[in-house]
Length: 108
Length: 118
View 1 (cartoon, rainbow over the protein chains, first blue to last red):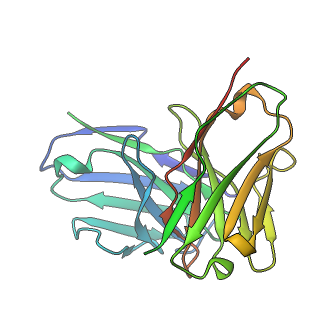
View 2 (view 1 turned 45 degrees about the vertical axis):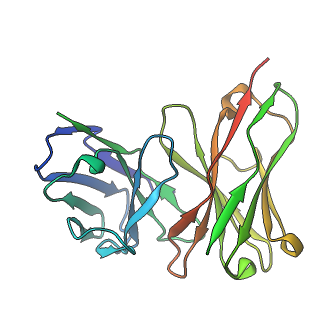
């Protein structure tokens, strides 16, 4: 079973700042990683797939990097609507998959 | 328009059985994997399992294997998640999600709250 570990658990920043979220896999998963955003009371939303590709209608301030075991989601110039919980998900051994435990991005 | 419409909230007692549903529309239901994802109150997302409707090929997370059953009725484009004996720890929101051709979840149902309490 592939375990994804996200850090930090909580990130406190201000609008306009840059957020850097990390996801580490317990084994190499190539680039088979996605990032999701979840706001309170809503279903998750796909932001990034295959580590670096933005999903449809995702603003350019969201970017993903990484391969192997270490991945990063960067959100530049934070907007008020970006404060949410972010999850990484791997699909390296599809149809098995797994999620990280999440990073809460909160307003400082 | 792609839609995944889930059944409504349920309140059950420990030991009772339950089946919740997820009806897909606006896409080729049989040729897109559907997953179930659990979110316990105040917690993160947990992958429960995934089914391929065309042949009912199903895989489960080790944490949920033997605890739930995932199935599908192709004739009505509906996937199911069921329990034979609920526990309080099953209290959660359960989402269904459709995988795209690259096996990421690009569409999600609205979620179904399951509450198990005596």
